[in-house]
Amino acid sequence: MLTRQHRRWIRIIYPLGIAVAMATSAVCSTTVLAQGVPVDTTTTTTTTAVPQVPTTVVKQKPKVLKGKDVKVVYKVTTTDPVVFITIDDGSTVTPSLARYLDRNKIPVTTFAVSVMLWKHREWFRDRKRMTFENHTWNHAHMTLVSAAQRKHEVCGASQVARNVAKESPMYFRPPGGSFNSKVIDTVAQCGMKYLVMWNVEADGGVVRMAGRGKLGPGDIILMHFLPSLERSLVHLMEQIKRNGLKPALLRDYLT
Image (cartoon, rainbow, N blue to C red; front, side):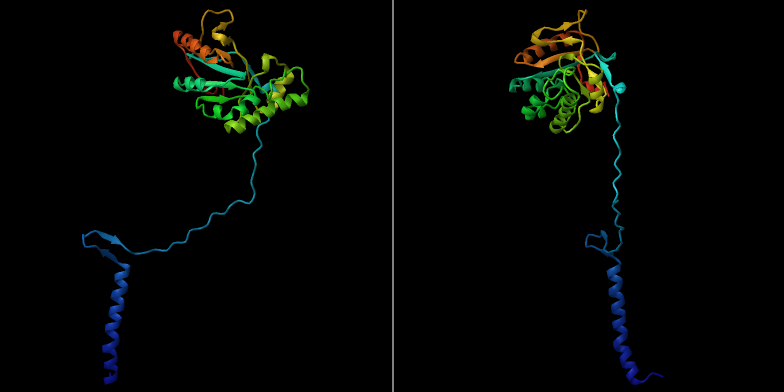
């Protein structure tokens, strides 16, 4: 039997309990905005596992090439109507040449020696359709130098190209086209599997082809960074177009 005092406490506590329950329900339920769009205000706390960072780094050894892995290429085997403009060492790059190459979107495979490549690195970096390959550090005669000098000329040149272009050369071209088995072994040691020669020369505005009358698919064209290069390129591009061809990058065909 409830006493008068009990009934008094019930009248005080019961409404408070209902109010607390209603308040809790309101917080955990869906709130309706004035516009009538329901917005879920319930907050859920989840615990996300922190991924473990491996403490041991596994380094994969790069493939070690041998002399037998290096291919000597004078011409690319392809039926595509493309030729390959390759430009070797020299001493001259100009704003005018840059504008001509960029305006005509001419892809060029560059074999500049390290001394020139580093000296004019900003000019070369600005050429978006140009790749940078290996033509030695300082144009040494590769069949006449010591093994140590040969390795410095080739591996050192690759490092300079990486510093300029942020990628390693894929091809080596020997100065003067002079090479032997020792040179090929060094090319392999320095991580390249193509020794790229040429079958067409196009310096001085004259296109010289061995025993042929016109350019054909897969021709590798040799030029140099000479003061006459822009004029020679204009003449060469006319012949390329006249024969229904277009220039391409070696890296799109020799991989």
